[in-house]
Image (cartoon, rainbow, N blue to C red; front, side, top):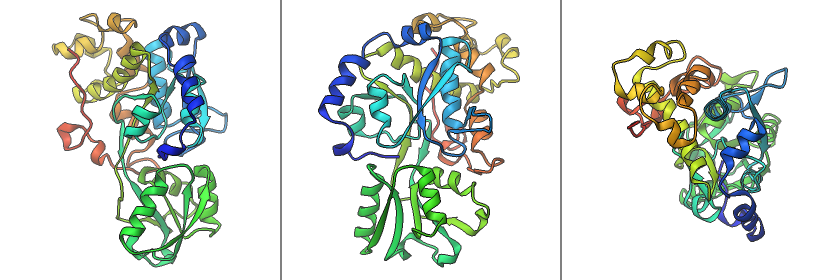
Length: 339
């Protein structure tokens, strides 16, 4: 999801984030508390959702668990801090969350104006349109006069306005606050179209009783690089979150999986040995145990395993890797070397 820069936070809130939340010591705070507070969505199938027992699962949640595995040695020691598109940055900047693992687009204004630090793109996405086959359209350029469900306070609104204006079309906005509200309004026929990130549309469609009767139109109208964020002012914590993500990508590239990670400790590949803490002092440089990345892979898995388990082709979400394939497979997922 995306914010308008002018609607994100007040000056007072920004000041609060700088003075009380974004000081050094997040790692120490998390370790002393014994749990990691992750800002997540209110619920998006495949990305962040609860099962019948109330336990959190999903692509974003697994990256939260990976962070906990690295810093606490236990992927289960997490607390989900739920947020809407409007509240996610406030919760992070006020230190109610330690890190944001939530489908959030990296933009200039968020990085600079909201005083956030982003740590790589763990999902490359773009804004799309979901419609019922009964609407009889095959292209977004046929949506003139349609009513559109759209989350308020996000740049999804700006993308939508720009696209319709550029194509000489009009629409009626149906404002919503959460993905669940959008789903309910769309299925109730209060809007002809639901627009958000294409991954979110696929996740929402997977919950329908008749998903085959709803299509995601071919047009992708924006760039939405999604990634984790932390507050400004704590370089150690920023480094940790950055390299948690890169560890999952490097592990996939090197063929290190949950099943073989113990065996890989005897690898002849020096980078694998550094990744798993057998050689080098990278854990010490981060302020973590030598086996921090080993714990990520052993307890949660590599990037491909996280993707396939939660949102991949064999899940109800059914997403292909596409741009999120490794760079060696024609995608954009690429980690700097562990050296």
